[in-house]
Image (cartoon, rainbow, N blue to C red; front, side):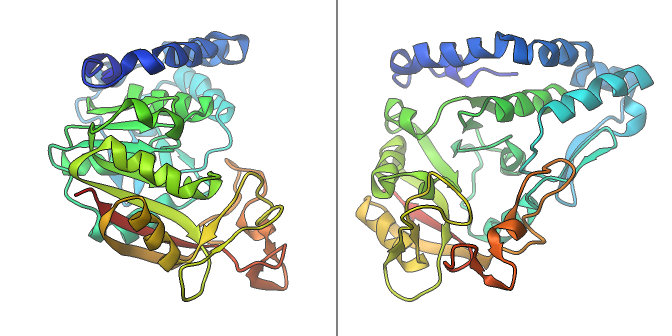
Length: 325
């Protein structure tokens, strides 16, 4: 795996965030992760898998991020792998297949990617960031455009470990991930060409401030792709529930599509366009054996799926793109 932090540390304020990065990585050495780390070490990596089988592939097949087939691992290796996959429950972004073990993730993330793809700028040779990248599923889609690199940031230990596992089995690529978040973007002024930030903004108390942080991390001419839960309606306004929305804690503002565009403009972005708008369905977001907790169906009014349990409009999704001039 490449280490983008080390490779580019002279081009951003590495000293400002290096202590936090080290602290977060050290946390993965504690007992909760020791068995997982030891098990992962026992499994073959991409080079070893290719030596066994020159036809071994890691690729996206019909939206499924796929690593090999069942026959690429021995029986003993499958017995090591399966507990590691279960240790990472809940799996939210996918679908993914590890050597024939199909991970039915909470989200059909490939559907979202297909909706967004026509409006995403060409990433060939670009420095790309995926803020709130989860396990990195979308980053593998981004590889198709041959970016210079894609750097995922997400503070979750489980998502980082899932990404590390996938990278072990993946063909050599230009992806990397750190357990950092929006709060660390200040250290990357004028650094990225393209920034994705999907499903993060409604968790922020200051959405325009977050967009300004994204704006400052872009080079001139850079573009941001921002996605948010949105509510229906005409006009630039936002819903701000006093307590929960679809049982979610730690949420603050849910804009209309027009409001999300206005936020982008207030943050300094130009040529802001809506590239996708959709109603989230229980086919796209659902519970499964790999995400056995409550999901969208349990968040909606059982008698009227156009409303949340709290009586608010059910979640829609809006994706916009804007440019730093």
